[in-house]
Structure formats: C-alpha cells, structure tokens
Image (tube, rainbow, N blue to C red; front, side, top):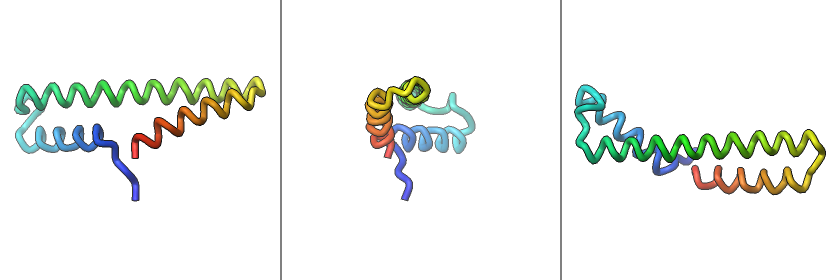
Length: 83
C-alpha cells in the first residue's frame, strides 16, 4: 500500500471538488486558502528534499560517508512523514 500525506489528500479533494463545480474560483474562500496552504507545504517539502538530495550527492562525491549518512537520515525522516 502506498501512503498519501494528508496535505496531498486534501489537495486532491479540493481539486476534485473544483472540477465538479467548474473551476477553482467556485471553491469557497476558505477552500481556496486551504488549497494555497497545501501548495505551499508541498513546495516547501519538495525544495527541502531536493536540497538534501543534492547535498547527499555532494557528500558522496567528496567521500564524506558520515555526512552523507546524516543527510540520508534527514531525507528518510521527511519521506516517512509523507506516508
């Protein structure tokens, strides 16, 4: 089973509702704010994961295995929250 983070589930629900209603502008003001919040959380998570993955690659490139393991632990902690 693949887990889905609550933020992604909420985004999917809001997008599905907006499609049924005929557009994002048909969502209530609160729903639009919720969707925006979900997008921000998602973007922040993607940026953070990408940064850590780039650092992990750099650590491997310079041969700093201990640093790479520390970074990988941070990546795993974030990815675990996404389940």
